[in-house]
Each structure stands twice: as structure tokens, then as C-alpha cells.
Image (tube, rainbow, N blue to C red; front, side):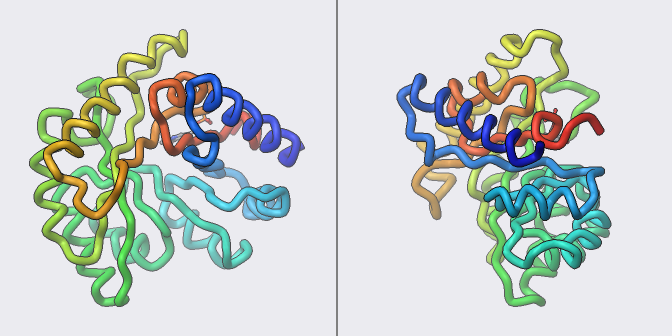
Length: 227
Ligand SMILES: *Cc1c(COP(=O)(O)O)cnc(C)c1O
């Protein structure tokens, strides 16, 4: 079941990429395993899936010990600075850095571990009061500040658009995230990378996110089922 779902999603990713004139290799699938047991991760891993998304730090910590060591965990939930120490030790990427305070906390724990970590800035692209993330208008300033920290490397942007019924309505938000990343890129604010990552699109709208330039899609329900 999980294996077939992964296969189907990967085929759709490749299909949408080709239709959009992109290479399927430019899009990474994050299998969002939040609230599913470690056994589900191991099953997906056996089917060739490497990257998993989690939104509670305690869950990453527990699953780390119960899954193959090569599993890669992207943190996609709201991260409090007081959890930065565990996050630095257990996660491979934090997709949801949304403040300098959090960036600094991560950086100092990473320094202590002698580690460098790739992170994304979570942007509240809809300027939606219900959603986490830095405002679009404040992203540039945060990126400049985070770029001064030695042990994190900001690789791009992540967003969760406002909930909409018709996935087509997510398109303008995805497009705006891409335009924002391109603007920051042209200003030289992603010095360490060739092309910024865009983490956007979930089970219901990843096909649209790919048309709009997503390089990371985060798919949960369509792989593991309803939570
Ligand atoms: C849960 C979650 C997803 C996956 O959502 P599905 O609709 O289950 O695919 C993606 N991104 C974030 C940030 C999430 O919290």
C-alpha cells in the first residue's frame, strides 16, 4: 500500500515536471510521516523513500532511534527556540526557520555539535494571521541576518498557503514564493547556492506547486493515508 502510493506519487511528480519543461530530478519528495508510527517510515524506506517530514520534535527524536540510520528527517512544524537543541541533534533540515532568535539558537547548538545544517525560511506568503512564518515583506531582512550565522546555510524558502478548497487557488501563493526567492537570489542573498529551494505543495496541490517551480514537495495523506 505505502509502496504503491510512493510509486504513484513519484510518477506524478515526474509527469508534472516533464509537462512543465523541468527535470524530475530537480524535485525532491518529502514523505510527511507525522503521527504515523516508525514502522510506516521503515516500510516507505524499504520502498526507496529517503526523506521524511515531521512536525513534532519529540516525534523525530523517538523515530530516529526506531528507523534506519540513513533516513533523512526534515522538520516542517513550528519550532520553538527551546527545542532547537534537540532539533540540531536529530534533524537533517529545518524547513521552518521564521525568526532570528530561532536561527541563533540553532546555530549555537550546531556549533557545539560541530555540525552545519541546511535550513529554509518559512514564509507566510498569504500574510494569513492563522499561519506561521515570516511576512513576505520581512523575509529579506531575516535572510540577511541568518546569512551571518556560521553553522546554518539558508537554501531557500518554504510555505503553507492559506487553506483553499480548489487547489488551483494555491497557484498565486506558490508563484509569489517563487518570485520572492528569485528576487532574493538576484540580490545575491543566497550566496552559497546555485538555485534556491522552494518547498511548497502537499497531497492536494503538489502538482500545481511543481508547475510553479517547487523543488521540494511535502506529501503525507496521499502516501500514508488519513491521520
Ligand atoms: C501535514 C503537513 C503536510 C502534508 O499534508 P498532506 O495534506 O497530508 O499531504 C505538508 N506540509 C506541512 C507543513 C504539514 O504540516
